[in-house]
Every structure is written in structure tokens, then in C-alpha cells.
Length: 422
Ligand SMILES: Cc1ncc(COP(=O)(O)O)c(C=O)c1O
Image (cartoon, protein in one colour):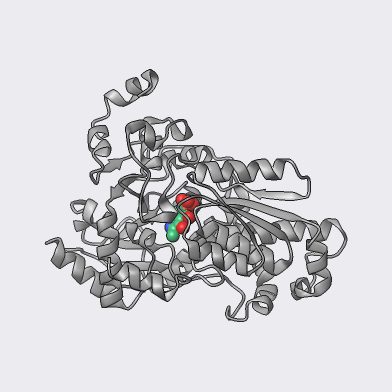
């Protein structure tokens, strides 16, 4: 371990447990402090308006989306709640709710929100700049061949552990862009094949996510026609993810679920590099303030956000520096170094971060499938462990719990069977 790291780490009581890859929880004592952001809710409302403009296009291009709006329901999972109560000898007061982003249309993961939004925004800017489109037009015209031909003059590049690549690849290929996805070693073969079948160029690395992103960034820097989707720093991705908060608020209101001082909402979100959970959490905090308590969930071998936030080092520390492997079956969460941009924004937003063992992810995967008939990929189960980590906190009578499910719908049958037998 490097000297300056040793200094930073020596007084942190969680470090030995983290190094032993035991599940831990870290509470953030800066939560709800004042902070200024390089970002505002105006940008989130702008994203929501842009997605509405694109709804007719999306409806035409992907007929499976009924109203052209990329959204998932919130449902109550009472059988899963009963399982957790039994298996962990506890009582969960309040509702256990699931935000079903595993069922988001088009890309079947939380990455559909931000990723598709960023590409739509880029396509809109190019088309407007070239006098082909105005914001008042019917956006269905973007589905015409002449637009596909126009977008063929442009490239998109992205680095991914799998799901961001899927969402960027699917929407970019549909619009007509040339798209290259730089996949880390964790990315599953079926995700790469699905993209290749759509005509996407997939480059594979024998290295982790950070390296895949670096190569994608390099490719884009050398080509003025190439737009790089920067999972670590993009404000557009962040805005796309944050739109989820507006939708959650409307959905909870429609279900008469209050979020106020009397009825706090606990939210548990799986975290990789931090973009998706960061954007969602920014939006939720702006809307609900102190009445929402947000926790990020990471694998015991990949606690990059926990480590970055707890030490204040953000992207200047990698999990390898405390001896962890960054090896996990939760491919979407296999990130060793967190986004600096997101980590810094989360300093007053998240209430804490916790870690979870892969074994729990598979236990949860089987139980959800058996009891609720819902399939979610391993990464998407990290949220449920928050209910076990926070056992003392959630005994609060009127609190409700929202577990964010982040992926699963596109997982092929043979992989589902494989996961269910693990
Ligand atoms: C299924 C799943 N859950 C959660 C995440 C975490 O998102 P982020 O890397 O933006 O933190 C990912 C990222 O790829 C994912 O694929």
C-alpha cells in the first residue's frame, strides 16, 4: 500500500473488514449538509421535456413501448418481504417496494434511462444544427431513411461492463450511427453477441472497466465525428438518470404512498461507477430532501464508491489498493474506481454505502423468482441486502423501502437457468 493511502486509511475502522471482503455498512455524516452542484433540476426538467419530444419516434422505432416513454412500474413485493423477514429473523415495518428498472423497455436495465437519453440528445443537436429538424417537428421523421443516412456520418463510442454498452448500442444502431462499444473483461458474451447482431462494433479487453473506458475515450479523441459517452463524467447521462426521480414521485403519489417527515423513504440502489445511482439520487434528494435516505450497494470485492467517499479520495483510490480483486458475478457492479464527478456530488446526498456478498445476490435471485416470479440479474439484487444491513433503522414504524432493481429483462433463458441453479 502506498504511504499516503496508508495514512488516510489507518484511522478508518471499516478498512480491515473491507479488506477481508466482509459485508459492511458505512454511514455518511455529511448527508443533508449544504452543497452547490454543477447541475440543477432545470436540467432534469429539460431532459424530461426532450424525452417527451422523442416519445413519438421511440413509439415508431420500438413498437413494444406503448406510449414512447421509457419507464418501469413500482410494485410491492410482499412475498419477498416475508422471505427476508423469515430468513433473517426480523420484522420489516412499512412497505417493501421494487422499482422495476430490470423491465425498462429497449435495453432492460437502468442504463436505458441515461444512455438512451444521451444519444437522443446528441442526435437532436446534430439534426437541428444541420437544419434537418426543429423542436416543434413530429420526431417520427427521425425514423426515416434519410435521417439514418445522415447519422451514418457520425460515430458513437462508449466503455462498458455490459449494460451501458447495450443501451447505447441498441439506440445508436437504430438511429443509424456507427457505434463502437469497448467492453471490459466482465461483460457477458451474450451482451456482446446481441450487439454484434445489430451491427455494433464490439472491442473486448482483458482488463477491467476503467481500461475499457480509457480506450473508448482515446478512440473518440482522435475523431471529430465521434461522440464519446463518458460514463464517469457526463452531465447528459446524469440528467437522463435523474428523470427517474420525477417519475418515482408521480408513481408514489398515484399509489397514495406518502413521503414526508412522518413517512421517510429508504432507497437502496446498486452502484458500479456511480452514474446511474448518482443521477437518480440527485433527483430524489432534490424532490424529497431529508425525508429520503439513500444507500448505495456494492459487491464486497468492488466497493469503489464506499472507499472513494469514506476516504474522500474518490477516483484517486482503486479497490486493488486495499487488496480486493474486483471480481464479482455482479458484472454491472464490477468497477474498481468510482467516478470522481459522481462521488463528489454524492457527499451530501447518500446516507451511506454498504457491501454485499455474491452469495446473497444469488439467494435473492432465486427467491424473487420463486416467490414473485420476477427475474432480475445478479447486480440488481444488491439493493435487497440493504434491508438486512439496516435492520435497526427500518424498524421505524412508518418508513417505506424502495429497492431499485437495475437489470434483467434481456438476459437469455440459458443464463437465467444458470443463475437460478447457482
Ligand atoms: C445491472 C446494473 N446495475 C447497476 C449498475 C450500476 O450503474 P453505475 O455503473 O452507473 O453505477 C449497472 C452498470 O452497468 C448495471 O449494469
